[in-house]
View 1: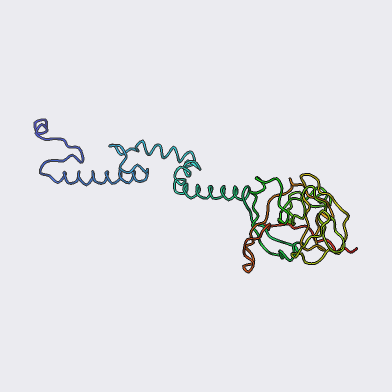
View 2: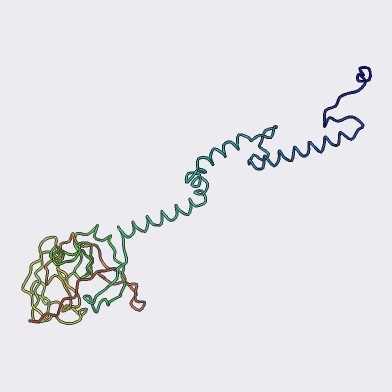
Length: 272
C-alpha cells in the first residue's frame, strides 16, 4: 500500500545498512574485487605503477611496445651488458695493439728449423730479433746474424716472398769475397772463422759486393743455401738482427750479431 511503502527504503544489493550485517557483506565483496584487480595488475606487469582504476600504467605500455618489437634486440643487450665488460675489453684491445706494435716495429721471436747455421744455432733454438737498429744504421755490421726475405732468385726457385731466412753477414758493399782452399777470403785476406762447422769444400770466384748489398753465408758452410749460390743480398730485404737466445735454457743469453725463422734451405755439400 502507498502508506506502507513510504516508510521503507529500497536497498540495492550490497548497499550497507547501519546496524545490519549487509555492511560486512559489502566489505567482503570489495576485498574480492581488489584481489581480482591485484591479480590483473600482476598479470599485466603494471605492479604498483597502475592507475587508480587498476589499468596498466604508461610503463606497462612501453614494455608491451618493446616486447612487440622483439624485446629491444642487440641494442638493449649492448646498453645493459657493455658497461660490465667495457673495462676488460679496453684492456685486451690495448694489450693486443701494443703487442702488434712491438712485434712490427721493435722485436719479435723466431725459431731455427734447419742446420744451416749450425753450430751457432741448432734446430729448435729460439731467438729474439730486434728491428730498431735497421732504422738508424745504413748497413749491418760484418759478423751480424740477420734475418731477411728471400731475393728474387730464391723466389723464382719457389720460395715465397714472405718467408724469412737467417744468415751471417760476411762482407759489405765494396768488399770482394772469394772461397778457395777451404777458406773464405775478404779483399784477398783469409778470414779466421772459429764459429763454422767445418771448412768449405767448394770454391767460389771473386765476387765484389755492390752498393746497398751485403754478402751472407751460413755457419754450416757446406749445408747452407746462401750468397755463394745466389749472390749478394739487397739491404732492403733485411728485416732485423738476431740479438738474444732464450731457448734452450742452457744457451740463454745475449748473442752478438745473433729470431720463428725460415732459414735458408740446406744445400748439398759441394766439393772442388
